Length: 343
Length: 144
Image (cartoon, rainbow over all chains, first blue to last red; front, side, top):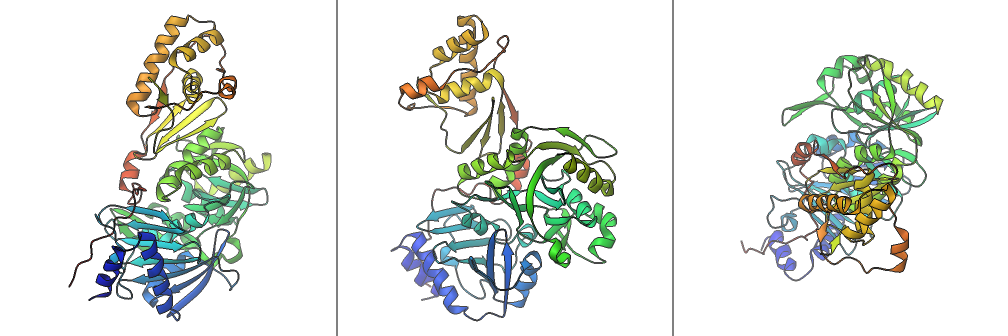
């Protein structure tokens, strides 16, 4: 009888959460020693990450903000089907995404072309990322295991929100908006100008205090912008081309201490309106809510009403402005700084 | 007919006199402002269409039958859009009755919602978005 068959037999006798908890414990028992281990900070959490191979570490580690060993809020194992057979955990109708929140277990099955299974035992603070095909799509490589971080934020004021964030002496701005609105361009332009970088895609925000913390040190740049940031991002970067959307996959780990967070001072909503130079217009709390919520809620399965409540609070923490970022990216930092200093 | 604003997979948030509704299933957003927001808030406070029409007419010095008719049409359109549902409204209480009154100024303007569906295409491409909470049906074991 194969391990998967044995697990399948158990599946008929115990709840899904029980089986997942059992498999997580088995994986940790098997991987007490792993080829690559690292410590990272991810929002307000400290992580210990064990990779079952050098390839997996090369795939995910560039996105993590590596740190020295400290408090471990989540111990994560990144494995493939070659290391551990978890096929018994793949739910029926495997082509459908699935979410399980039960008895302290949070688990997400993301099928698509390259499937991924995430699961965390919130009591044991142990999580797994299982890649059945040994690979992960680019957007998962750039923000690995973010759904598990989302699960750990449940019942806390923290929320992983879809947005970029950069900061300088006057405070941090949260850049909210859907894809192609210019968040990455603005964030990288400010970072190139010496600002602190907290992320270009998802950042952690405390909905009670407005504290922003970076989750990852990755950025995904469209080819058209490479020339603008060439001397900042280096000569070569990995390029992904998924669904006809090429992206330069950047790791900004080299920024060192400039990867960091701070207090939210304003929320900017980038939008294109044809301005040559950056222009601001007042916006409402509801505009920030509409800009932040959609991708946040859809990318982070579970507790949608809690997410909406936190995002509504975040939208109300600081003044909100629409910003047309103009046609010259390197004009953005001075315009943003001026706007933040006026507040 | 009892109506409820508690609709599965529909998120609602009030910002001052504005209400934002987001359909978590299909990614469509709705913005309710002015009289539209007040009608939705009235339904949330367990008021009937007639009570809402009457209160809105009083607040705007308008004609009760005409306004009630327009409120009814708006309620029908929200029902068709899935922004409210038929069902058992929460028990009416003195507290809830005192807690709601339409906040409007000027002449009555017919209620309507703004619909934003520009994110639908993006969301349909996202592999995670329709993960539901319907459980985790495990496969049947198979002998090899």
